[in-house]
Structures are given as C-alpha cells and as structure tokens.
Amino acid sequence: MEDTTKLKKKRNVQQKKKRKLVNEEEKTIPDIEDLFSDKEIQKIRESLLDWYDHNQRVLPWRRKNTNPLEIEEEEEKGKRAYGVWVSEVMLQQTRVQTVIDYYNRWMLKWPTLENLALASLEEVNEMWAGLGYYRRARFLLEGAKMIVAEGGGFPSTVSSLRKVPGIGNYTAGAIASIAFGEVVPVVDGNVIRVLARLKAISTNPKNLVAIKNFWKLAAQLVDPCRPGDFNQSLMELGATVCTPSNPNCSLCPVSNQCRALSISEDKSVLVTDYPAKVVKVKQRNEFSAVCVVEILGSQGPTDGDQSESGFLLVKRPDDGLLAGLWEFPTVMLDKEADLTKRTKEINQFLKKTFKIDPQRTCSIVLREDIGEFVHIFSHIRLKVYVELLVICLKGGTTELFSEHKKEATSWKYVNKKALSNLGLTSGVRKVYTMVEKFKQNRLSTDSAPVKKRTNSRKQKSTIVS
Image (cartoon, rainbow, N blue to C red; front, side, top):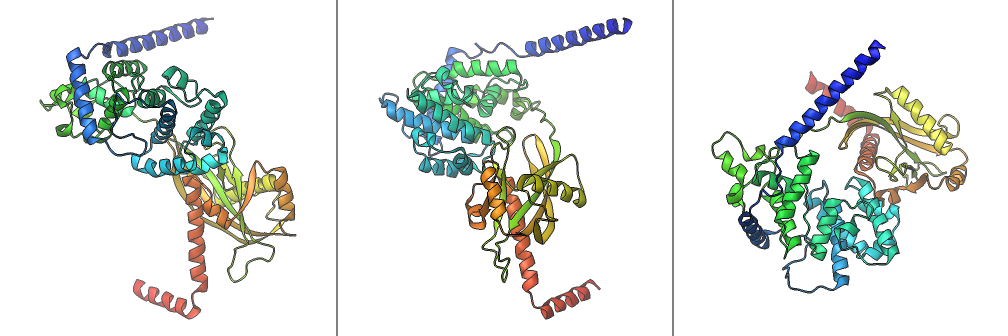
C-alpha cells in the first residue's frame, strides 16, 4: 500500500513538471497573431511580389506572367491544380532540380487527372522510383481516383482539398491559392525560416504552438489579390535567398523589415540563429540480407551468354516502409550476421516463397557473397548484405511458373531486359549495380590470357618487394 502511494505521488510530481514545462514553453512563444502592423504587411507584400516577378525561377509547373484580372476557365484551373498538386508532392524533401525531370515525365505520361486515375499502382511506383516516400505516390493515385469517381471537378477550397487522401494543410493551401486564388496561407520549412527571421522568433519550429502561430503570421501577410504568387514568393525567398546556412541578406527584398538581421548587427547573434536548430532523431540500425537469384535457361550458360536468364522479384507488403514495391529476395536480420547465418536465413526464405531448395531442387552454378553497403532512410540506417545466387532448376522452370500462377501477386520472374527497364528503388538499383559490376570483373578475369595474368602477378610481387 505504501509503495502504491509513493508511486502515485511520483506520477503527480512528474505530471506537474510536464505541465510547468509546457506552460513555460508557451510563455516564451509570443502571441504573434498581430505582430505585423498594417504598414509592415503592405510593405512586405509589395516588396516580395515585385521581387518575385523579376526573380522567380522558370519551372514547368508555374504559370508565367500572372494577370490577377485574367478570368481563367474552370477546366484550365483544374489542369493547373493537378500540376500544382503533383509538383508539390514531388517537392516534399526533394531538390527542385531533381523534381523537374520527374515532373516532366509524369505529365507526359498522365497529362490530366483522368489519365492518372486509369493508371495502376505498379505503373505509378515505377514512374516514382528514386524519389523516395512512395506512399505519397500511392496517395496521388488514390486521390485522383476519388476525385474522378465523385465527378465534381477538382476540389477548389482548402476544406474540400483536405478530404482527398494525402493532402494536408500545406498542399491544400498551395493548390487552393495558386490554382484557384483562395486567400489562404501556406507554411513549409522555407516559410517558417523567413517568418522566424523577420520577427526574430527563435523557438523550436517543430513546437505545435509555434507552428500554429507561424500559420497565423502567414495568414496575415498573404496578399488578397495575388495569394498564389505571394505564397510562392515566400517559398522562393526561403529556397534561394533566405537559406538555412548561408542567407544572402544583401539580396533580400524584405531585409529592412528583418528583425533578425537588425539584431545581428551587434554581432552577438547571427541571422542563422533563427529559427532554433532542431536536434534530429537518432536513426535506428537495421540489417538485411539480399539474395539476387538468377535462374538460367534450361540449356544453361553457353560461352558466358545468359540471355535466357531471369531474376526473381518479391513484392513488399502493402503497408509500411516502401509499401507495395518490388525488390530482390530479402530477409531482415536481428543484428549483424555472418555468412553462414545469412545463407541459412536466405535458404529458408527461398524454400518458403518459391519452393526453391538450393540443396535439392536446383543445381548451383554460382553462389557468391559480393559485398555490403549502408542505405540511409530518414529514420533508419540499413546495412545491406548482398549475395548473388545463379542456379539451374532441375527439370526446368515448369514447376516454378506453376507456383508463380498461384502466387502472382507476391512475386514475379523477369528477364534481364525487363529488369533493366523496371522502375526500382534506389536501394534495389544499387544492389543490381553491385551484381553487374561483380559479373563484369569476374568475366574480365576469367577471359584474361593465362600467361598475361601470370606476368601481372610477377610484376606485382616485384613492386611489393
């Protein structure tokens, strides 16, 4: 009973401390809803829009020479909204220069929302391969299908856009303001940085109270006549001038209104002190073993020709990391493992998934541990062990393909040409590149004249001595 009482008291003390910390943090964040005066608002709007008109980057998803008095047809607005949507989703945590090529290819394949709605998830994933965060691509497809199915045209307000899968406050604000002229703000990392420096707000930008207040500040500033251009000007300023580490304050159109710059003149603080730096979450370590299974044709290899060979690919689960994407047979490991342990795990996986037993149902032409690499995700540091297994199936591939018909949704068998053209994640492509490099090195070594190789060894030994 006494222990229970002590435990309750300890919990109450901890809860009071937490409440105190939250209250103190909230006190340090001013009520910034009305921090901008009318004069400041007007000056910032004029300066930013003038700067944007003369300095905006030419990007394929932007409409040039915006005329606020121009009346645009609803169909044109819908097309523009679709382009803005695709670009904004692609731009999340991806560089603009990288996105341009992806965007152009995407719009060439699916120029309208209706075209995208007819696509398959596999097609979308292939087009998205290399951009990362594949769940966003899935949401684009699901959203397109939903909008087309409802038949009411592209949603034109933030409230209606928020009902579309994968569209959050930022994306909704971008589409609504840029494509439909709704007077609403957008707040992303670039906008937060600009606003934090304009008002010298040093609080943690990830703090929920701070985020709400940044949205209030942005809402104050957004220009009622050109909301889309103004929102883009804020983002453009943060991306090109008011950068995280090297802001070019001499080129900033609102430097006269920047409190951080004014404070920094006494050298006690820097403009880059705003907003506060956020400590990144430490990545967890994970380990996996990948086996690239290459199945030779029934005739086997002839003079190094493996044109009849094919590879096994496995579809990842529909939920979680890299959901629904294709990869080489892979097993997750509890920790770093030696070759014996990895081989055992891979053999069990091959037997369970494909009914392939390297000890019984096939003859092994080559089995080689070809190396390892580390693949970085935002929250995971994945160490990947790579193995190449080249086999000939006893009795040919008839039994394999009969199993393939039963399990067609979970794995597939593709030839080398199809594999090269398949949209694969950057991690899977790296595995395949390692395999190809290993094969080339092995082929060049095996085909080198014996005498020449002997001389090379002698020469090497002479240099070492």
